Amino acid sequence: MRPLSRADADMPVPTPTAYASTADPTATRPVVELVADGGPMIGLGHVGRCLALWEALGGDAVFRLDHESAAGFVREHGATVVPAGELVAPLLVLDRFNPTTTEEVRELQAQDHRVVLLDDLGAGRMAADAVIDPPTAAEWPPAGALVLGGFEHVLLRHEVVVQQRGASPKGVLLAMGGSDPFGHTVPLATALAHAGIAPTIALGPAYAGDHPHDGTPLNSHTDFISALAEAELLVAGYGHTLLEAAHLGVPAVAIPTRPEHQVHAEAFLQHGTAVLATPETAARFAVELLEDRERYAAMSERGPQLVDGRGAERVAQALRDLA
Image (cartoon, rainbow, N blue to C red; front, side, top):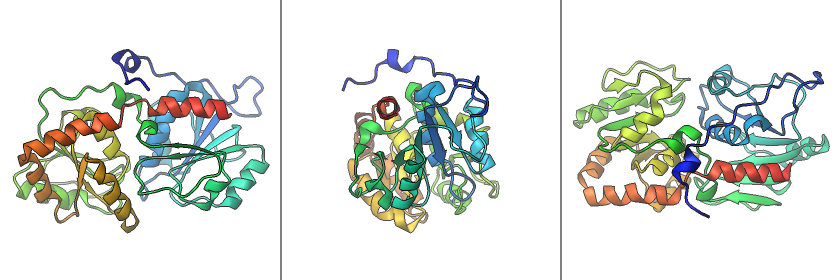
């Protein structure tokens, strides 16, 4: 496929079509319903990549979210969040924290919905109408139908795709997710400061931890992408942010915060865009990577080669075809 051009990137993001409810005969029924888990204990990674799909689908998609912090996040971008109750779209994209079972998929299909699972290792993969497999898992179990996988299907929001890399990147950006449920931000900021690095700190929209005394917090979580593009290095948890950094050519120090992520992180880092660390070793690895300019340059070049920024566009078209 052709690489992303600046003409592609400058295309305006579609605005959502007005939707009231299925009881309103004048409402436009959405084609896709994005059902994503997110909140203080989960973070907003699931919601963020679904927001990339919403942008690519325009008025064809709405959200169904359980936590107000997640709902507020997508509303800030102009998305519609439908209330709890009857599912309103013929095609459901489930981006959930826990694996989806076959029974859950079959029940939804019996209600005349097509079901797409995003980043899901559950047995429901064999029954789903399609699966979207990000390149952040070591391997994926078999699926019964359409598989949209690999780096060419990475879901990046429009603001990431159009963002230009800083001409003279400098500094370290510390970002432990939309909520940092394990409280790593403060000790990591202190460790980086002791290593001679004063980090810029991204506190996510669902962050409820202590205010860090070391480093400089961003004024707003909406500044995150521009701050990432200007940073020389990212220190972050293991997740979707690493794909955003890769696209922008920002090498990363990745810290898996959940034991089940370790094997996936080890496999992902073989692609050459980040190094693996623990909360105790992250500051040392950051210093070493910044000093090893040859390795740093190779990692910076590798990221955009893997993540071209057109994944949401490709997945959106596949979903329209499926629906």
